[in-house]
Image 1 (tube, rainbow, N blue to C red):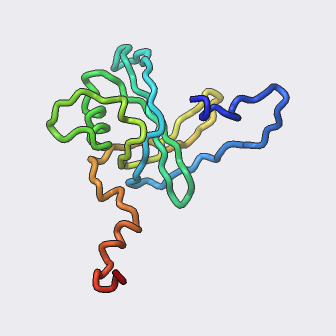
Image 2: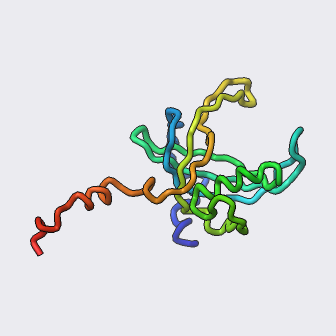
Length: 163
């Protein structure tokens, strides 16, 4: 853990340069992602769902436009269990109709695919903002994650190899 935090803590008089990255708004469509963070938390309750546990998930989508970070919550409540199942199917930890124990320890680093949309909201200052949102999760399929390089290997004729 020490190596990760090396040179990360700042002194009160340090110089700063990093401005952060601009929000990369994605066109609506299907995108691959990788889960980069998972936190356990509590949903305070609302009109439809009472207070319950929640999983706060962060994913990254790498595109030609740049890197997009999307955060979303999964409420651990039976009426939205279908969304949790959909997420676990998306990252390859569950199949349709299969009963599983959620393995949150293996979520970070998992790859998945989702339909991304844009959602408008009003922030605490009354400004209208647009963010990327997960419209729906797509069931895991390893072919979604085959790189172009891997795909090209099948086009090689073994007669052309020098050995």
